[in-house]
Image (cartoon, rainbow over all chains, first blue to last red; front, side):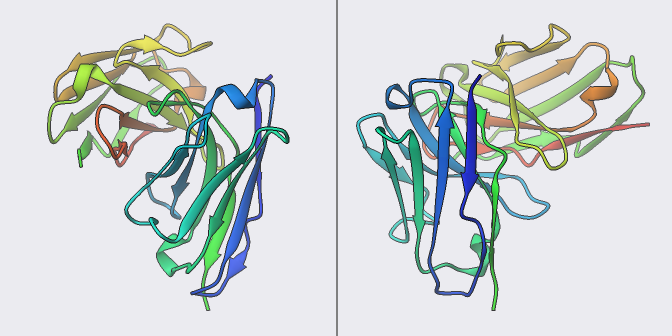
Length: 117
Length: 108
């Protein structure tokens, strides 16, 4: 069955950096687009970043220039490099299978990023 | 950016009752590119509906979606105990893709 498992969440100080990973199984990773979506504590969902099967990337304005999404098709792995972190980046970060920059049909359980001094 | 407003914020119902959730867009959603998700506490969202009315794989037929343009509805025909959760709509007709703020369906 399809599984997505995020890791890398942690407590980090403002201005710091963190790298999230998402290990995927149960489908041919290289064939699919992927996204990161976040949810601040007690809040709704916010799409963060997208990567196509060929590596084209798109970012939300709120993270553009600070976050970098990448993928390793050989390792079935998705990553999110987060730099210059701010308090407002505090959230649970989900990786999700993206049906061609449309809806998200499978999600991981999420990893918590806390930005605080 | 398309803003999605869901109503009501909270819906208090009993098992067996019908739930009707609304999602209104600030501008027309192209080609009914709207999805619905269910999220339970501490869990990832689960895709229920895409294309405004197509059920995702494995979703029971008590869940149905309808609507077009700026007004969309998720209907749960008869609430089961496992249906009490938060529901989000999401549009993918224009970039950036956006979500509504959620409707919580709670047990009355």
